[in-house]
Image (cartoon, rainbow, N blue to C red):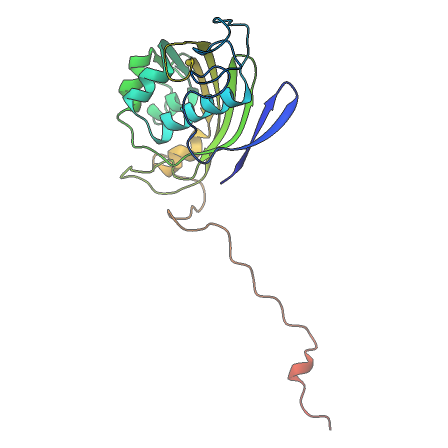
Length: 233
């Protein structure tokens, strides 16, 4: 389990994110009482900002969308007009080419478009490294060591590290008390393409499951090793 760092209003809070987070907690959640966006908030006052717990819930939404995707989650956590900006996924879908997906435009325009694409993908192991948040956005730093998991062409498991920014809006009628409206996501697309056998690297790559860390070299024997001396003459 890795400790994740949360930065909010200049305060550092250490929190563990390896286990799934419960829905509906924190300032915006339906069972929360501190915020203004949840059902039990302060009359829907949208000026109340994300709390640390809210940011953890938002980060966990992103993790579930990658690692344990379900249509039920997408319908509950995303706005209907949800949009996803990600040049990394566009270039991967293009298999390294410039087209057909334009890398600097919205890739998934609408929740249904995202669901249609994500629901057909194998789920991958996912680890949350850090969480940072502002008033209405949460930034997640994450990694996966099996980006080609479930693919027949998996050839390597180079770690892929990425950054995701989730913009949220209040919603008192779902499980969280807020929804993700916009996602900006970028990650190491080159490693992803190598792991999936699309790109051939200019160098050696360890097979899947093999630790690429070289074994330590045996220590050199001392020039004068007393244990090897013969009897004195």
